[in-house]
Length: 70
Image (cartoon, rainbow, N blue to C red; front, side, top):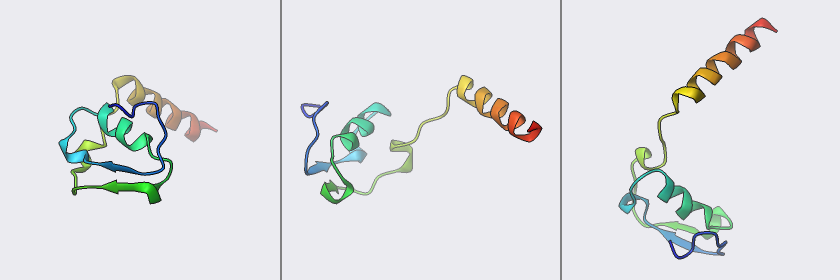
C-alpha cells in the first residue's frame, strides 16, 4: 500500500494474494495504463467483484421500472 494515491508507469501486482474488495482496486488503480500492468498469477473473479448493496439493487430495480414507463 506504499503506492496508494500514486500513479505509476508500470506496476506488478498479485491479485490472488490480496483480501477484501478494496485492495484489488487500490492495486489496479495505481497503474497509468493496461500496457504497464503485469498481473503475476491467475486470479479468481471473486477477487475483483463484490455483491451489490441492498440500496443499489433497489435503485437498479427502480430505474428499470422508470425505463419501462417512459
